[in-house]
Image (tube, rainbow, N blue to C red):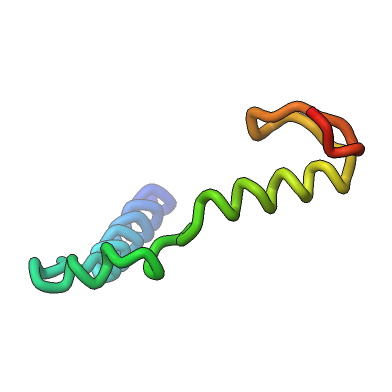
Length: 74
């Protein structure tokens, strides 16, 4: 019985802490968050190219929708 109450209190505490991390973004702030340099991947084409180069150099294939060998030709 005591373990159940402790578990409930821990869950409630984590829920409260999780709610403290939430922030409401105001309308006038959304424009700043939509800028390209605020994204996780500002240039998806360059990231795809660099991933292809990495895969070619390490002689790996698959996992990203592209198959190939270490020579760099598909």
